[in-house]
Length: 212
Image (cartoon, rainbow, N blue to C red):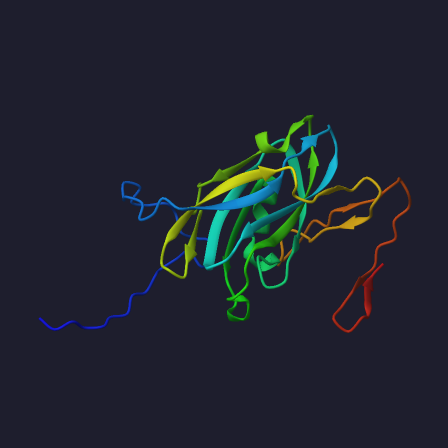
């Protein structure tokens, strides 16, 4: 029999609506992709800026859920070309869930080394360790990454002391509204370095003030 070329199409969860099925299927790979976070000791009611990174060399795309306990998610800061705001399900922030998906743009195909995926802003509820508050979740989508070699990599959280982070006690913070987009109402969270009066103004795309 003559050999013939064929084209395989990988079907993924492109819109966040897929639910886990066929749980008995054997994993194609035992490889892992480490999602790197800082090893932090949290104080009660502490505001934190937490970078989330990974070594994306040879990674074509990834998807997953991170469950955050003992912290309130205030917002997300995207990193251009990687996991942006449109990759998240903002309506799940109030449930303590970061659910995301990402496909590498062609212009970033050759990048190597550890890369910042996104930054999450949180407020801790009680004293504890960040490593005890975060976990990989598989409630709605399978947490995994795909390589250009067609390997499937399991996502694992790795907490490292060298990861950069900073407190927000002396900073002004304005986070992305959620839900976004919205029809009737949305929530805009902000943090001030000290109590004070806040003046709000909302403008349209042309810069005209709509509400003040």
